[in-house]
Image (cartoon, rainbow over all chains, first blue to last red; front, top):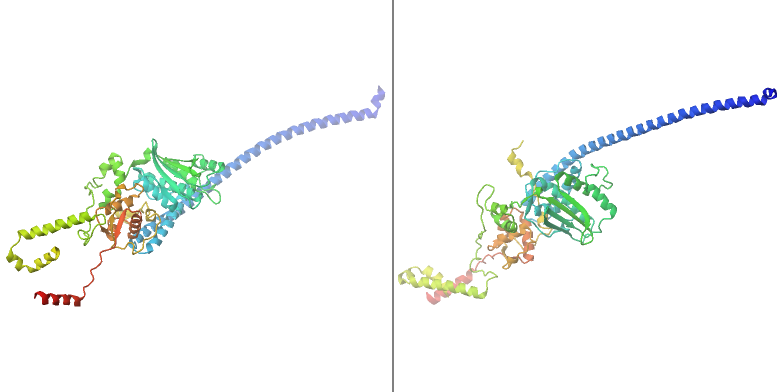
Length: 391
Length: 125
């Protein structure tokens, strides 16, 4: 036994074991602290990351807000200028209406409208100014206004009309949203196809249906469009892509703010996209009176008022000032020669003969009653002119 | 600041003239001059509803008899050229009939008149 005790190997082993145990214990402790530290670090890291994300988000928001503010005021200036230019062009159109310049003026007007619309769209995305408030306008006029704001307006055809007006508050937003729809429809279909607009009355209000003959949208595009049209879209101007695609984002904002619905999820009969803009009843009024020149008023809106709702027909008999309106146009011009001797193309030979016969009988009977020989000789000039008619 | 009245007409027209004309070009001066006379065609009763309100009001305006282009333009708020374009389109569509303006009577030849007078005097005087 003592042999063992004196055996240095045993001692060495013992020492080795003790050292090993100590090392293991220390290692364990170290590992524990390390783990602890690691966990702490991870928490800290998560915290930091979170804070970082938050501050980035905040910075982004601030930047977005700043961009929006800058763009908003810039667009407001541009919109003001576009509107001013439109007025100038209108004045020029009236001034030079009879010269060939008019053609060019109309083109300038068209370009200016598109320019104004672009500025308006960006302003909408920046929660900015939409433009001056409009008067109540008929649905048809609002559609035509939208038509005029796109490049290829000639390719748009309005196939039906309804007897409704749009409240003044909604005129501009609906026109702008529809213009964006039409812009998409004309841009994504071939230049020789027509984009059709149908206006239909439905129980919920009025539908403006835009059908194009383009290639339609694939699933990805459709999903993107639906996301932009729904309320969970990203707001603001960032994230519109490059080149930026304003259309659906603008429509989404307008639809939400003014309470109409836009859907693009169906296919048109021509294979393209069918987009439907649904105007609820609270954006609609009865058809407005035509604001054309006063004398033409009864003439200007014949179709809408006859079949239109009662208030419209009642309103059309008096002006806003309570003055009665003229019912129908009498001939306004006494055109030399057009009354009797110029045969209207519609008049037949028999009618002409009858009229001439009546005239002849009239002159004859007139002379028969005034067959006073003294008077006849005294007024030779009258007699000679009558004789000319008579022969 | 300007008064409210001056600010009031500052809203541009909602429907622009080029939309009303549907982008059509100006007609020739021979086809429609300022004094060309225009009236509605006889069978305009079957007027389709596809016409725009402006076209319908022009038709209504012309249905009462011959009017000159200048007069028609005066009764609408539209620029004259726009009215001309619309009238030309309506004429092409067969809704309107145009007639060249009444010719000014040519001045009679003085010699012929004198000869006639002499002849009459010789015969009756």
